[in-house]
Image (cartoon, helix red, strand yellow):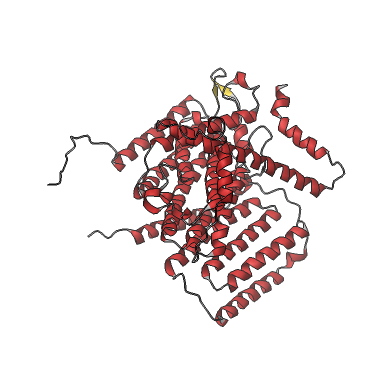
Amino acid sequence: MSPAAFIVIAILTLAGAFAAASLSKLIHAALCLVVAFVGIAAFFFLLGAEFVGLVQVFVYVGAVAVLIVFTILLTRRADENTAGFNWGGVAIALAVFAGLLWAILQTPELSVAAPPIEALTVKRIGEALMTDYVWPLQCVGLLLTVALVGGLILVMDEKR
Amino acid sequence: MSDSFDQIFIHAKQWLLGLMPNAPDWVMQIVSSLINISALLGVFMTLFALISVLERKILARIQNRYGPNRVGPFGFLQPVADGIKLLIKEDIVPIRADKIVHFVAPIMIAATAILTLGVIPYGRNMTPFSIDSGILFFFAVGSTTELGVSMAGWGSNNKFSMLGAMRAIAQMVSYELPLIITVLPVVMIVGSLSADAIVAAQEGYVLAGIVPRWFVFTPWGAAAFILFFVSGLVESNRTPFDVPEGESEIVAGHMTEYSGFKYATFFLAEYFGMFAISGLAVTLFLGGWHSPIGVLQFVPSYAWFFLKLAALLFTFIWIRGTLPRMRVDHVMGFAWKFMLPMAFTCIIAAAVWHYQRHGLAGWLWSLAVVAIVYFGLSQLAGTKKRFAPRTYRFAE
């Protein structure tokens, strides 16, 4: 992992995240959040986990960001600017950050050099998913199907 | 001799890199990437110019007129004139538009279209960006197009733009499912997400060297190819699925408020998206850069790739000249009620084919699976035409 690439991507990601938190227009904030998502995907690429990075782009930029943008489009008026500083939000964010930081610092293996592992190919991920992790996979599949059916029921015509 | 012709571009690149033997490793890497990028852009910009005039010529032939024939021989310098016109046109930005979003949207759409071109193998050893999960990269990057379209619709601050963007996203999200699921059988059979491995798996010939081992010649492959092609038509917003920019209904959809070079960028992105989808279809189902007949293997691999690409692009234009636009609710219903179940059927048919050891029995069984589901679905959807004398009602 080259330090120059790490610094450039970190600055971009943090700038995107900061803009997402501070911009007054919600749609701009959502688009800046996309920059942060792409930055995190770039980190995965830098770590050699290209599959995870691509899934990050696929799910977060391709689906979640579009969902957020559409939620804003369909619920807010265009000229509405949310003003004021939300101190409660700051407190929650700081609490979450502190909790994560504490958890990371508690991890004992942090300072140990990672053992050399062979490159994580898609094939190995697939094999692991279909053997060791088949139950979690099935549960996720069931959950997504339930969500799909629920969405269909919500928009179905009531014909009676 | 044929080998050196086949690898002529690889040798050219190595020669260029050999001009600076003392450069450090990272400089070499950057220069190598830059060579790949400029070659890719050069080839596809030329193809874009060529296809824009050829499309107008072919459409004119279909519609019994001449088409462009003023600029240059047979009108083939028309793209140059078009380019100059679009460059010097006034760039109009609506006063109520969201300036930044309005500006970034065409760039983002074009960038994603160009990025997806990178993972396609154009010839032997000629994949510009060769990664282990190339197919996933294609769809991950392609899925961000929707964000660009919604930015264009929102940033323009125009009801036609917003309606067009809504339609485009509804359509793209619906057809992304069959598009990705029709790729799954190929990935399953090959056991890899790498485009190079998929092309390598389609090497060789069966039946005394006549029929190549392309996936399109298996029943599941043929069905998946047709589904993939139709979904690709929708994803690139081409007729008969161009409801997002239906001129007679919503001006030009999300491109309504764009003019001059920004409009040209959208146009370029649409064509690049078309090249990318066609290129991926060639890679997945039509054997990539392999030659269709064993004796013609001396022809360079990239020539075969671009011939197949040209055939698919011609089909795109042909369909545009022949079919009328579909109604917006029909487009969506078709995706969920027909395309998606058929795409899942392709997976089952491919599994059946695989477990019959790729033989004749498997071929027939998978044909049976596809055929049964196809006829069942068409019965359920009630697409059978009932012919009856037409009744007319006249105004009194």
